[in-house]
Length: 132
Image (cartoon, rainbow, N blue to C red; front, side, top):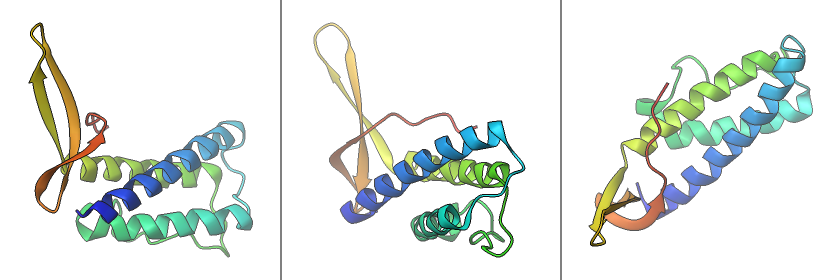
């Protein structure tokens, strides 16, 4: 990954997280209601960016590219797909970070950083999450 890839990754990941929060809330209230075309247009746009970032190796579902705007998916369908994308984003991130440890005299302090251009960088990130 390049520095630009990391920036794009973090942007799209945060957009996916925001969408998932909103769609999960809607799915709890009315899981079978369809997502409106206005929202679906932006969801598809973000998923398209996600597909580019993930590539074939990390894309969650080979047969899924985006939602059909003529056949509006339900809130729960969109939540399901967004959840799959976020899990694969975390797998990609976990495969491209490293842990740096430092002893402060009392204990070890750990920080996590991105691997950029196949080298350890100083771009901080959070620890890897357990993939569900």
